Each structure stands twice: as C-alpha cells, then as structure tokens.
Image 1 (tube, rainbow, N blue to C red):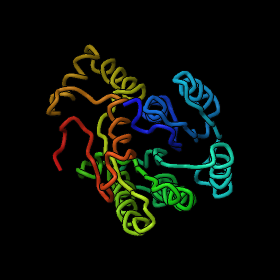
Image 2 (cartoon, rainbow, N blue to C red; image 1 turned 30 degrees about the vertical axis):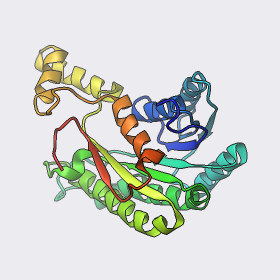
Image 3 (cartoon, rainbow, N blue to C red; image 1 turned 135 degrees about the vertical axis):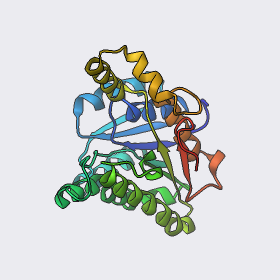
Image 4 (cartoon, rainbow, N blue to C red; image 1 turned 45 degrees about the vertical axis):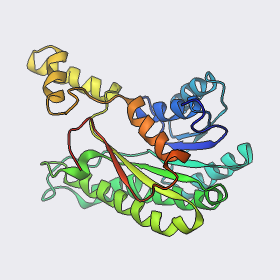
Amino acid sequence: MSALLQNKVVVVSGVGPGLGRALAVRAAEAGADVVLAARTQSVLTETAAAVEATGRRALAVATDITDEAAARRLVSAAVDTFGRVDALVNNAFVVPPMAPLADVDLADIRTGFETNVYAALRMTRLFAPVLSEHNGSVVMVNSVAIRHSKPMFGAYKMAKAGLLALAQSLSTELGPQGVRVNTVAPGYIWAPALQGYFAYLAKERGVPEQQVYDEIAADLDLRRLPEPDEIADAVLFLLSDLARAVTGQCLDVNGGEYHN
C-alpha cells in the first residue's frame, strides 16, 4: 500500500471530516503528495496536517469548485507547487432536495447539479491537459442511489445518474489521451455525519444506537457498514497502475447492500 501511488500528485475535492479526509490521508499513506480543495479553511488545515504527518506534502486551497475562476486557480496552484498532477478525485457533492419529484422545486434540482455534475465536469476538463502528460486517472465519487428508486431520492438519483453518464462519456473522450475515468458508488459510510444521524434516530425511538446500526447492517451481505478508509482504498486502486486497463467502470463499494 505504501508504494501504490509513490511520488504521484493527487487532487481531492470536497475535503471534509469523513470520506474526503480519508481519501487525502490514504493517498498520502500510499506515497502521494495531495492537493486539498474545499470551501472550509479549518477542515483544509486539519486535513493538511494529517497528510503531512505521513511524511508527504499537502497543498490546501480554499476553493468553490462551482466557480470557474476559483477552479482555475486551484489547477494553477497545484501545477505551480508540484509541477504535475497524476490523479483527480471528484468527491465534492451536495445533497439535493429529498422530496417527491412531483413536488420539488426545479431550481433546487438545478442547484444540486451545479456541484454534483457540472463542477465535476469543470474540474475534469481543467485538469485534463496536465493529467494527460502522465497517463493520469480520474475517479468520480458517486452513490448507491443510482441502484435504487426509493421515495424521496428522485432528485438525488437524477444528479448521480448524470454523474455516472458524465464519467462514462469522459472515459471515451479522454481515453485516447491516456486518461482513465472511473466511478465508485458507496452506500452507507460509517463516518461522523451518519453516526450523528443514527444517534438522532436512536434518541427519537428510545433505543440503543447499536440497535439502529444492527438493523441497517442486516441488509448488507457483510453485516457491517463500510468505513471511510475502505471506500478510499477502492478509489486508490482505481487511481493506481494496478487498474491501468480499467476505465469507464463503476465499482460499487457498499458491503453487498446491492449487487450490480
């Protein structure tokens, strides 16, 4: 694992306390220098320190990836600092309105697409020239929402299905330049946000938090919820030379909740 991305430069968008942080730290542990992009400076600072604690370099750039000028500054900062970029992880997302499609405001759906789809396209287009110099790789972080049609998830599924189509089309378009584009589709991720939600559900029902966890985990083949590092490791595989012949694919990382 320590040499999987040795001396490569990996850009991670949407750095946060859960999967975003895990992606950055695991990439560093695999030998990469990491460029961190997010809007919250305090999260960037903490994650950069965690990356540097592994012995690798970190560049934290406060970025709103829905802004073209800000995204261009991110690319320039990465290239000016490290001289190259080998991999891009489009991890940033916002949760679209959780409401029936018959009722949801179309403007709210468009807002979700700005981050979940259009920003991923923007980032990939801007980084594509430098990625092509080193047979680079892109991974889109998607969601298990593309595998079901549960009530209230319509706008979410629309955005994530769009992201999947984007990744597949970019794979075809960028493949001749040596750039691979793949997708991971996690389900539940046992990170702070989900832990807080389960604690809320347990309090509302008056049951132990472990009971809520066990009830959800019962629907997964592994009977446990994947943790951020486990999702991150699947991403690192797709970024690495081990997956050098893999492009245009979607790897489900959901503990067996859905089979594809």
